Amino acid sequence: MAKVIGFGGIFFKSRDPEALRDWYAKHLGIAMNDYGANFAEDASRPGSTLWAPFGEETNYFAPSTKDFMLNFRVDNLDALLAKLRTDGVEVDPNVHEDENGRFGWVMDPEGTRIELWQPPSGKMPA
Image 1 (cartoon, rainbow, N blue to C red):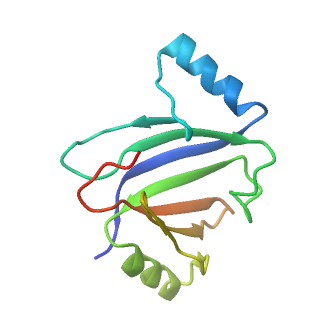
Image 2 (image 1 turned 135 degrees about the horizontal axis):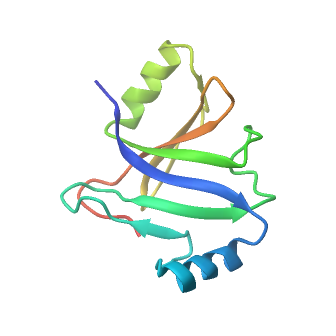
């Protein structure tokens, strides 16, 4: 059965994402890249956990009106999206693929946008 295999990230809106990244780097020693902070959990499995502030005007979380979005790593994106559609879950028809893997989106019953991420096999995304 296709399922979630880990937590992929916490994405949230910020008044000044760059300043917030700088603060966390300076005061907590969290190394940052263009996306935020990438925490590798298990080198034997592809994927990591990303902490990422977005600008407060971002539309990336739409259609949710919440100030955050959750990202979960999954083992089989296509199979899980098909199951969720069958279960009556609101599934975004778009699937995105790039060097970091494959991405799909669903909405939970409270209107939170959930990003489902299937990391590329055998490599750690940047």
